[in-house]
Length: 340
Image 1 (cartoon, rainbow, N blue to C red):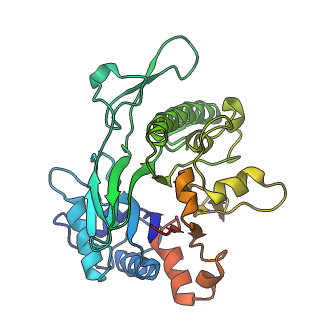
Image 2: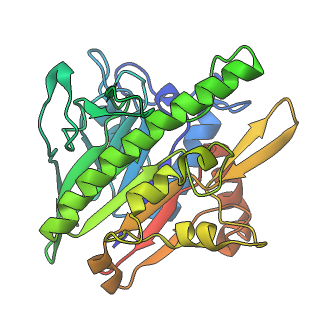
């Protein structure tokens, strides 16, 4: 079985309000890329992956007048993908949903959220992901109330041979959007990191619930974070990804790319994203996307792959796929092949 996570930059701009593809030469949400070019590139990438299930990050908008599920299923039908059924959890207000696109002939999947609906008061004990998490972020003896702008998608999955859980994540960005001075950028960056870490603590609580229950678990998506990505990490001791992974005295999830990043000295760490910095006229690469698995799943012959157009030999030596990956999104897919 192949399971993937893929952040598609502004997927929503590629669809009309009725969920049909906007296959035209208007600009997409990607820099200097038309909708037609991005759609074709995405079709090429999804077809090449041929995954049984893809956790789509920044999936099409779901709101009172738009169906993200219909849009994603229309996309799958247009390119005749095996993974043709879409599942959404709690919709959000950002036009960037989290959805699972899967092959219904291989797996059955349902949204199965755990935790309590806390209302405005919040709870410190793993509330439902569309609820409120209460935690002291700045050690001032006053509880802060934390919400997900994009609530993680909790999925119960069954196959003809197994059952397991998936949690799809798009964690808080740490970027200081809207800052008007270096000092304000620092303040916003620290505040955003606190919120991002709180979200990861919340996710870790849910992870521990599953680990304690013996549930096979896959946590995957875009965490907007990773070991050693910025100087602010030193203020808090560890990254949000390390929190979700688990500490030395805890039962740990596993992703080999995180381990490589944690253990690096001189060698470059793997990366899953590539962003253009206009002011510096160069690209920045970062490891942001992960597929973490519980210890029991490590016994099922897992193999990870980052579909990087330059670092993966098979992607690099296939010019059409290489160009499609660069055109489709500012993130690259991460796949897990596992015997389930």
